[in-house]
Image 1 (tube, rainbow, N blue to C red):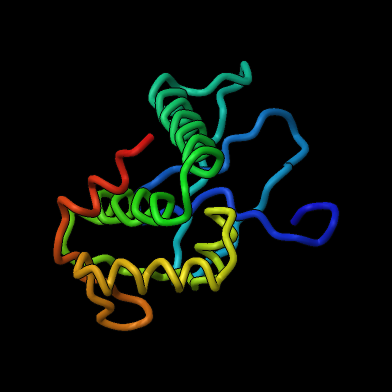
Image 2 (tube, one colour):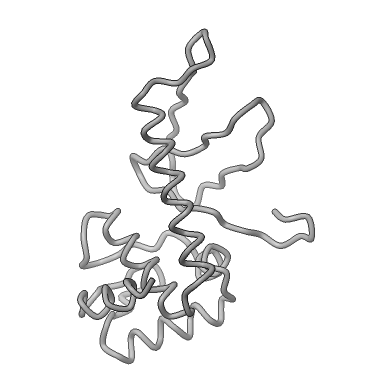
Length: 154
């Protein structure tokens, strides 16, 4: 939550992903579960250091955050949505069907758009034959190349 009461979603994590890296003892962020979730904690060693594997995961997460900043800051709404859908599809195992456990409002808060803009651009992609809305929580990608083209306009 921002100081003015608005909400900013900084990431969506799926099964097997690592998150929650913060320095020091004060936590700046919190996580909210939108589906049944299990968590595992990782402790630091006695000297206050993390394992090399954990550091690699943290660096990958930092790169993901930087890429997200580029998307939110530089692309039009349709391109932002395309990047989001391609990323989510790849993280779920490939282009085909995408499960959307999050709401349109959550997606908007993540991409810096209103729920109306998210819905309008999903409708544009549907009208163009790029995707089919199977339900409010499931999307079938009909033209993966078109979606990739929209997503790669950085």
